[in-house]
Image: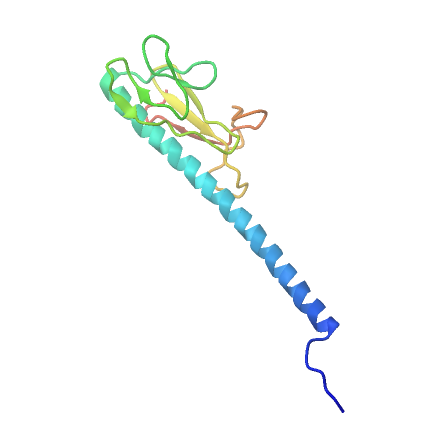
Length: 155
């Protein structure tokens, strides 16, 4: 009697099913890790902007004002510092070589009248403990911001 070696169709189907389940779990975990990484980057970006604003207030005794689109008015001639561009003043002092920008389709929002500021962002991970669902500011399209940092001397 000749015996053929190899796998049966049932064994192959079982292995394929197991691999499909494992890959589905891996992809979902990978997606979650990417979302969390983008959120960490957003929080870090806002901290970078905040440090630049604190340096600015040390030089000018006031925070730069914001325009109606949530951007920094960085010069006295109402020049806007867009996200992704240099943040400097009229004297040429550079506070940030490149203002961070959110490259995920959301945008950061800056609000200031000169005496204090608030920076807003949208955090994607719904389980993040720092989410503030009371924020009504929009961070791109119709998406509400849900994370903010404020100046230490907010009034």
